[in-house]
Length: 400
Image 1 (spheres, rainbow, N blue to C red):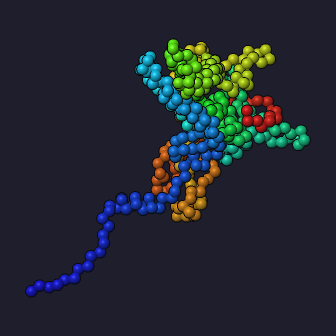
Image 2 (cartoon, one colour; image 1 turned 90 degrees about the vertical axis):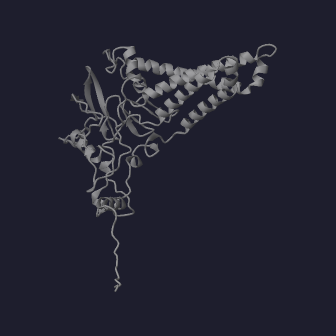
């Protein structure tokens, strides 16, 4: 005799407890803001912060179009003729030069030139406390404290100027770019043709760009002249050759004017590299003799060859701005570990660029990120020992 039994089943979780906790963690995870999204300077970022350049990039696009169009006309009309009548190596050499020129241009334009992080509000307040001196006697005779410090490098006294925008004492050779609104280490100049500042981290690629571009201009100019001369052989003449290849005339005009401009710029920067100098220092006369006192460049390596090797083959320092790192959320503006409104991260102003996160992974449970703190007023590139402070005087807040 059989007996019918009604059996009820209840759903059971098949995932492991670890996987369930991970799913809950990702469900409750708020949208994280990366630091490039709140970057205080006037820069433009692409590809999730990997590409960094100035906002005013119109001339940079013109540079790219000019190089690509001129080279394209050369490959389409001149290289084919020269490869058949002269040598097939001509388009190969031109192609290698073109690739090198574009790669160095993009490396210069899309990289961090050496931006120095701004001071956090706490660091700026601490610097103000160190600078400010109590008023004494008559307030009418009170003079503000100096905004410069002095360090001695190889026996040469060097001033560290205070930046009123970044709230830091700029390291030696640094300057504030008025276009990008950033302090740049070993600032050379802001170049609109590459759409970026030229500084410590991209000067090598800038020099290689103008050097290779000058070689490419001379190479294209010589090849186009050779092409027209070969076409002008009897019974033809030079006018018939230009009529048969009108694109060559355009290439000659563009290459001729570009050749002298770029070649002159390359020669000027070769002179600066040989003397371990920058455009900013050369214009200001930083290391020129003043008041009959011998003034030398303490950053020179001792010779032309060593100075060139230091720029071309020297190490490139890492970027000081953690532009792809996550912004630290403010725990006082959250409820139960989550932001109060629209899952937006509330940013504390003191957690922008005065500190550099050690890791870029999502935060562990409990909130917060491990952060490496730097002494107030010292930029992450390394502290510069202050030997003495200049005599009190009222300096004007310039951004030089």
